[in-house]
Image (cartoon, rainbow, N blue to C red):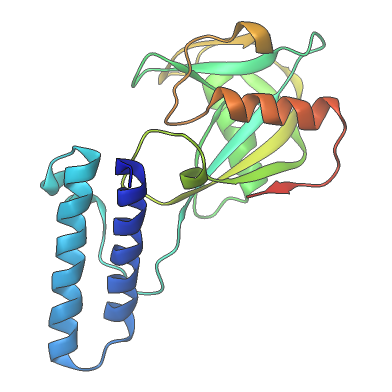
Length: 207
């Protein structure tokens, strides 16, 4: 079993423990579920190679049924079929614009806001291209379970410029991509999204 597969198993154990804590009535069972959750976090920290305190501090105890986090991203191309990308300040690598879904905003509102903030480009959503289960793709291992919503968007205006927390913004041809921030996007995903657009596939891909 690979480290990534091990991490997926630990995530599942954590989710089971948290489901137990939500519905438990017996105090002895609650203690066991709490211990199981702590063990899962320690294993998660070990497999993801991050300090336990960081993992423990990130995960707020679940008060209801645990669900995946949601990452929302926009796939924008210009007239030359080049892909709009932003350069992350965290790792100095490139990705398509996007980020975590915000409470209080629709997915469309989030992706339009992220495109504008990260690249300076005004955009509108055309349709939902794909929903990726991040754990089913070759991203680096991480402690969170994530769904990725990929929207096809059309540029409507604005001026290409890096956002305040980004190091760059530009369009790139598919066959000459910059170094990718693989925590956020993979070349295989860009090629898949590109093919969906160029072949005018109208159904949404879902893992």
